[in-house]
Length: 102
Image 1 (tube, one colour):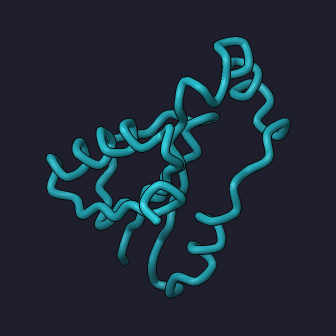
Image 2 (cartoon, helix red, strand yellow; image 1 turned 90 degrees about the vertical axis):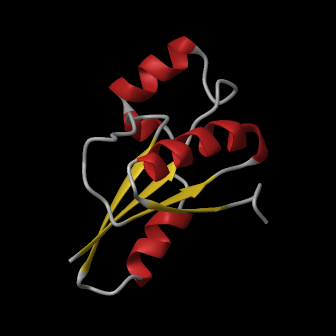
Image 3 (tube, one colour; image 1 turned 45 degrees about the horizontal axis):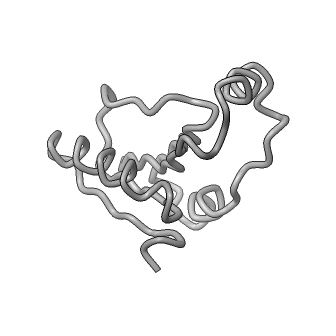
């Protein structure tokens, strides 16, 4: 089985500290971006896709993935590149897309 992680990175501009605490306590208050779940729906059934929205969940580096996909807007791009670098250092292939890349 192919394991894929998709990530929507956050930026400091996304949330204030109080908003971040509320978002983690009540994640349903935030509207989720639909791009990554849509991509997951189009993947073959023998692939396992995990999604992390960093606004409400921390990115994990301790799980083995075959591919990591990151979507980022321009304010989040520097952080997205840092995340990509960490995964590449682990030998995991990374693709970046989203508004910044396009």
